Length: 306
Length: 264
Ligand SMILES: Nc1ncnc2c1ncn2[C@@H]1O[C@H](COP(=O)(O)OP(=O)(O)O)[C@@H](O)[C@H]1O
Ligand SMILES: [Mg+2]
Image 1 (cartoon, chains in turn brown, blue):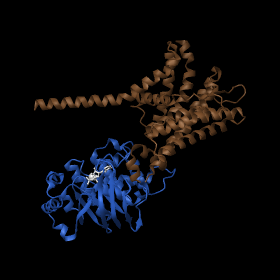
Image 2 (cartoon, rainbow over the protein chains, first blue to last red):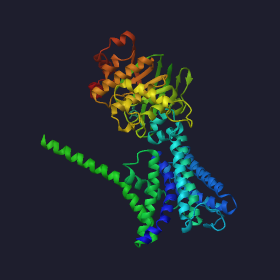
Image 3 (cartoon, rainbow over the protein chains, first blue to last red):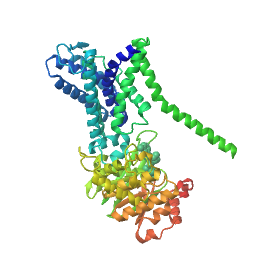
Image 4 (cartoon, rainbow over the protein chains, first blue to last red):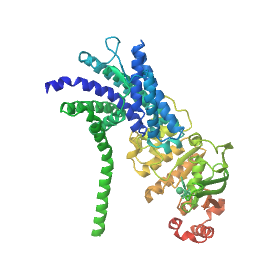
């Protein structure tokens, strides 16, 4: 037990970084009502850009900003494919993601994995035990800042129009909102945040890897779903919801570290994640089916009684 | 003010589902006209409105508003000229957004959306006053999600949104059809009030022939994608439902007996 508690900071820090990514997923999946698969590629792009720039001597904060912008660009491309080429959002995301795989390898000069050594560079986060408290603090600052900015933005005229687009496109257009441009804006913001998280993750794990984003969308969705199940009833405010998503990411990683301790093969993790997410995504559907059946039965009963 | 000339629209052309929805529409509205539109199911009433607002492009023909050709303008760009209320109460509002946020979205129709506050304090006070007039108790629920409201309440809010900036043209598509009779009557009288208060030019589709005769200064009847009857002034005032049924029977060669117009 004690050893488990002592090992907690690492999954917490990791969960916080993935929680930031999950905020990005929340913006597309929940606010914009689009499942954006670009993020699997964007996360690695963020990591690759950060590591390559930092190892080339660029200031770590500037490298973070460039990583963010690279993610924005990826989101912009998916947005264009979706709105200007008329490609369904899921497919547009898959196309960008695929293209990013090659681009990420180019960024990393054809290496699948580029390490970054904390001894040689001023990294702001790391998984080393002695700096874990600092890592958690830095992540917390990032989370608060990101949630604060998003809370502000989605309260502005422009932010309102993005939310309206995700909620009801007919209404948005009837009120003069260019829904195509709003979808692009949402995708840009989302992928920027995901790339930023990728930059943090690369520092945390000490390397950028071309496969680091594989399944990111599923982890993001898991965090969103966990937050809905656990905090859905109490976190109504938008900022709190985003915070709930981060907590969702943390809970996810704590649970993962427990099941790994219990002897689950690390290779089976993605299978487990996919099953859990599929289960929760299916729940509302089954619920509605059940209540439908119930209603039908009750109706039949009424007829018999009448 | 609105000038529709030779508008045709065929859905799914060249397939077995081909459907000629509009078959040469010519219609001119004058400033301050309140036109009611009747016609059986599938007559092309909604399609006519959708052509005007740009939901779908026209096949041919032209649409002008105050002399400005809007035929090829995307829907969001011409939205500033129109206020719209749909048949489905879910369509006109954003369910996940608050009442004040929905109203604020409409208050910015046709304006640049910037990084300023989405709803200003001053607006909140104005919205409260507007909502008070509805007499639905909504003035105290400014921050409630619209999704929590009833269909009638949502339709009333959509009406406020549609008339908010005194649009050049108000378009109503059977906007009380999904409501229970009492709520429908209430929303309809509110509609009439808002239209006369702002002297708003209006095109209102209804399936209720009594309402079509009672309200407005002009009535048009559609059949098979065409306007088959257009009557205004004293002649309209003296109309009876039986007259309309007769006219409709003539146009449709008696097949109207199955039509839901009979029920209205
Ligand atoms: N988006 C669409 N795609 C295909 N057919 C359509 C579409 N919209 C309307 N129609 C068809 O066009 C005809 C006119 O429809 P509509 O304008 O909705 O009639 P109304 O509102 O008078 O009942 C109908 O036959 C309808 O099935
Ligand atoms: Mg219709």
